[in-house]
Length: 183
Length: 417
Image 1 (cartoon, helix red, strand yellow):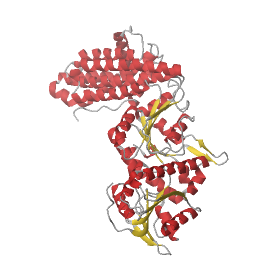
Image 2: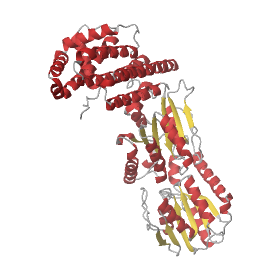
Image 3: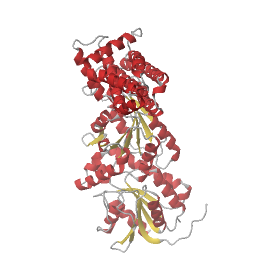
Image 4: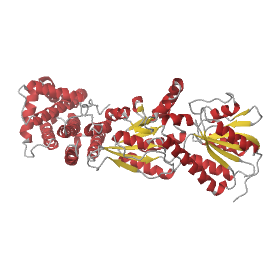
């Protein structure tokens, strides 16, 4: 395996994921204030935005994946220079997302990076689908994470999750982020 | 429609297709000299269109191809249209590469064949497969579940560019998810769906919103819904898709669709007959360029038309085409003196005036002859459908033929324009 390229990795949290997965919204939750523009329409985040939480953690919002190559490259470069990647999705990962994650891990160093997978919009699923189906989605995502972990490129890069959350259910993701920051 | 009726319809359509092809071949060979290359091409194109319709009617059911990313709810859409839970729903992983055709019961009974085409984003290997399914189906349904990603649009673009003539309807599924949003947010998303999907449909009405399944908290289950918005569009769709849907009436809307299988077969026959009448009318209009053509060519052409119509309408092959032609022509001339007789006089005058004369009156005369052939053709159809008899009131029969000639055909387009 080629040794990963050396690059400066900052102590910061990168919010990465498909368009409209809820990255900006989660960012605002972690910040405790509305700093990133979040909207139901696609493409509100066209450029990466930086903000700092009250306790001094840097947070970077990125444009969404699955919406063309430019945003993908931008998101990749932010992910690779961030110590924690918070990957946001509201359902199963699509193949281009899996490809992104594999490629990302290939260039990461286990001692410098951590990945947290966050399954957003739990509140919406509670209202619109049976428990069995919600479980199935989480199971499917767990299987996808397992596939990533077993992928040679992911060797050693710690992956947490999927952590489930949404409006009224942010405890778990806050805890996971704290643990990653301290770890 | 039951399986027996379907089988009868399939057989009839196959026979009709043979008649259509031979009628047109006959027209093109026999009257080739009267038709410009552009007219020949136009006739062939119209025939290809009705030929496609017949080919599709031969399948005996409505054939749809459903496209969309994994988890967009394609299986739920299949179930909603079929009115039965036959496709397995739930989360599907985005690597399914298998095309799944669904039918209700045996294929003879099923009102639909619905093909679930996997939309693995960013996998070019599946592109050919998607195009093949779109080509084969009677219509395509593009399913999204909110504002689509660029990667989804890439697949829709691919299909639209490869099969531009395939009828397309866009369904924004999981509308219930949107209804949980504040209304101004929902409006924004609806606006974005319309904006991004607009290029795939002919008219904005062909983008519909609905939920193929809804969560019922009481039973903690997803409950199949009816996608009436989608069904409406299938029935109202222009071109062959709407025609096929109305013939097979998959949603059981018998009040909207035509009545019995017999009536449907008759309607299909009329459609084919009208294409043939139009082909002959174009050929007849072309005869203006030939001096004295009225006397010599017209009856021969009209006999041929009558013979073709008799076959297409499934009449006794021993029918006396010459006598039928002369009888109908005679009644037409009596009732529509202006159109028929003046046309002939104008034709004769034009011929007497020589090249300058017929050139001057060419446009008006050609249009007149075109119109006259359409009326004649419709009158023959009415006559045949009435057991080879005129109505008691001959004048109203010919007015009906004239009315039908006006509503069922395109206007004459002059070849010199």
